Length: 92
Image (cartoon, rainbow, N blue to C red; front, side, top):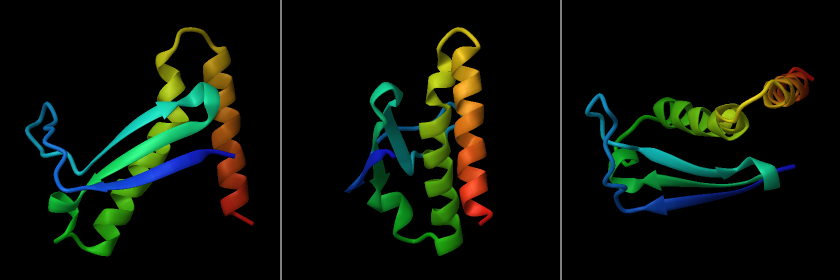
């Protein structure tokens, strides 16, 4: 349903407000079901698989929740339905 581009970059060069270096960042166009996820090779190269998996899941959830930044309840309803579809699919 989504077109998602996964990109490995040498280094993202961003830091969070808490001072953590950015391991991944996402640019989502929820209206068109497209997203680009950039991953930092420098940050990920020494991580365990489980930690990388958590980062990937985190970024994928940003795709679904991104439109929540918009005003109104229509977005919340669509995101809720979308999450329900995902969870239902995974529980098959």
